[in-house]
Length: 404
Image 1: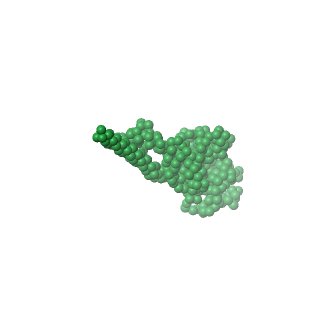
Image 2 (image 1 turned 30 degrees about the vertical axis):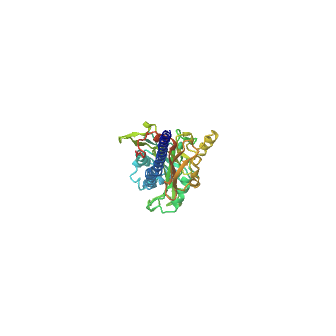
Image 3 (image 1 turned 120 degrees about the vertical axis):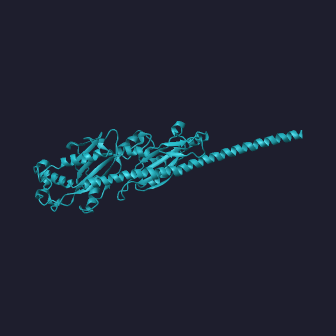
C-alpha cells in the first residue's frame, strides 16, 4: 500500500512539474511576443516615420519653396507689373506681338496674357499637386490667377479673383521683401499653415474638401535703371519697392494619402510574403495632424480638418469626439502646446479597449523663419496582435516585417 501511495504521489508531482513547465513556457512565450512587438514599435515604427515619412514631406515642401522663388524671380514679372500699372493709369495697351519694342517698353503692352499662356499654364501642367499660381498686390488684391483642374490650367475670370487683405500670406511676405534687396540672389519665402481651400463668389470651402498649403515670395516694381523710359504717371515713388507677392498653392490630398498609407507584410514559414490582411491581422495606421493637433488624415472622416473654425464648430454641434490627437493621446499635450515644437516618443492609448500603442513624431517641414510642423502617429492594436501571434498566425516568435 505504501508503495502504491508513493507511486501516486510521484505521478502527481511529475504532472505538477509538467504543468508548471508549460505555464512557465507560456508566460515566457508571451513575454517574448510582447518584447518583439515592443521592439517593432520602438524601432520599425520610429524608422518608418523618421526615415521615410518625414523626409518625404520635407522634400515636397522644399520643392514648393524652390518653385515659388523661381516664379517670383522671373524677368517677365517686372513687365507684367509695369503693364498693370499702365492699365490703372489709363494708358492704352496693345498686344505684345504688335510692338517691336514691347520688352523695352512693357507699359505699352498687355503682358498678363503672355505670363498666363507662356509661363504659368505650362508650370501648372507639369506639377499635378499644384492648384494655382497667383499675382497679388501689396494691398492683398489678386491681380491674376491661373487655376489647375482635371489636368488643365485656365486663367480665372476677374470676378473670381480673391482678396487677401490682412492675411499673413501677403503681410508677412511683404515684410520679408523689405528686408532684402530686390536684386538679391535669393528671395525670402513665406509658408502658410495648412488650411482648406475656398472658392466661388461666396468664398466657401471647395467640395470635396481640399486641404492646401501656400508659399509666397515678394516681387518688386522695376526701376528706371532697368527701364529708362518709364512714364511718370506710373507712380515713381514705388520704383524698386515691394509691389506684391507671387503665391503658389499646393494640394495636399495625394501627399496626405501617401503619409497615412502603410502596408505590412509578414513572412510565412516558407519565406513567401503574404499580405497581413490575408491572415486577418490588424492593419497598422498613421494619423496625420497639423501643428496644432487637428487631424488631416484619420479613418473617421468626420474628425478631419478641425483647424478650420467653421468645421470645428460643426463637429462640436454634432458631438463628434476626439477631433484632436491630444484627445486620444494626452501624453502629447506638451508637444502641441506650441505649434513649432518638435519631438518623438512612444505612445499608448490606455483608455482604448484594444490598448492601441505606437510611435509618434512631430517634425518641422518649413523654413526656420516659418517652422510649420506636422504630426505623425503610427499605431497598432496591441491586444489583437498578441492574440494573433499566440494563435500561431505569425509562424515565428519574431516575424520579419517588410515595408513596401
